[in-house]
Image (cartoon, rainbow, N blue to C red; front, side, top):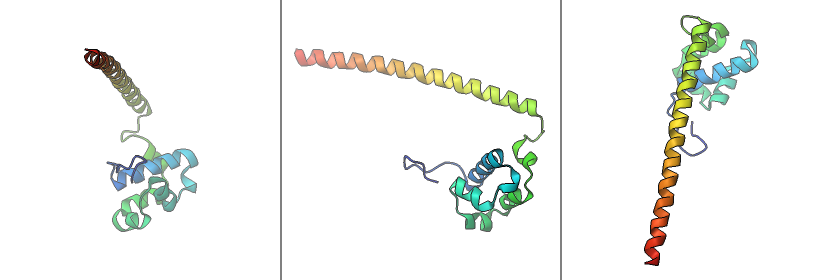
Length: 121
């Protein structure tokens, strides 16, 4: 799938399909989902799924929301804890990026002042 910026996604067809299936299951429930809808949402070719990924078709056909949405051990509290850890990590990364942006902005200002000074002299 090509993103809006023209770069191709690093996700495999199976990963895109699984993500799309999970999203649609959360939104619509297991009884209203078709392979076509999942493929359309994932931006993958339906015939490619049928030809190369029959295991993905089985996931849609079985309609088992529990198998797809829960973690391998099925422990909901562990899943929430993992989400909290991921959120905390993302906040740290955001803060680090924000700090870098502020530092770069200060460096740009200093370079502009130096350039102006050199023009005057």
